[in-house]
Image 1 (spheres, rainbow, N blue to C red):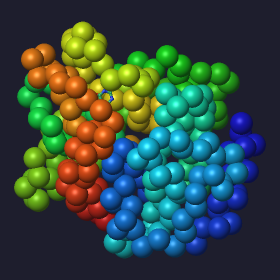
Image 2: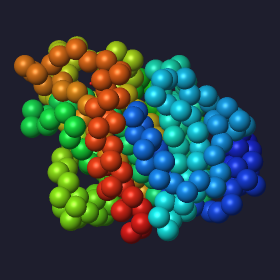
Image 3: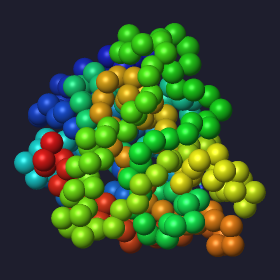
Image 4: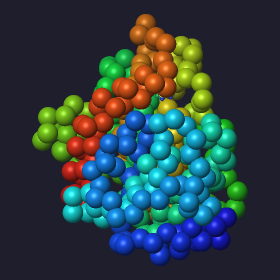
Length: 269
Ligand code: HPA
């Protein structure tokens, strides 16, 4: 595994015209920010040695290097999900490669179902913490020397970055929520009883991604900032049928606001 990570990192390093220290992972319906990047290098995942290939509709699967404003940036347009059948090592492989490439700060985004009754569809939720309910842990197995065997998780989402996002949102008049993201394997959306259970467990939102990547990034000492777009509601009395298309549509509608916050953060960091 370690050799594969090195191999992929050196393959990319040779092609990269700059050495970004910031990376973004763009989730469902959130590719818009990538369109603002002045692209100097764009590679389909399928061309990258050892990279898994993304299969889900709405995830285009490209690694992009370029400038966002004044900053060099590495962007993953599309991610790998556990429900697609990848192992946790595969899901988090790109994050390990990012670490090898010198990434210090990671911005992640996703779509999720809101379980907090105060949330509405289209809300942006800054992720303050997470609950890992994936059936396999991404750090299971021989420990990587990037971090300790038993990593501390008391601040998986960097507080300084959260404070900065709050300040930017206030300046721009963008309403943001804060909350705990619960990661579960999917691919089913939740039954009403499951949404209820996740709420009782302490979740404000539930989704099928992000948690594995954040755990590995944190283990590598990468600072993480995460935003979740609330695309549907898993709140008693408000639960209606949900589809991937609707999730994408709702995410599309709010992504300019998310992009506004992330762009500004990236430029200030
Ligand atoms: N549940 C799980 N994942 C999701 C949801 C949801 O309600 N919405 C978007 N991704």
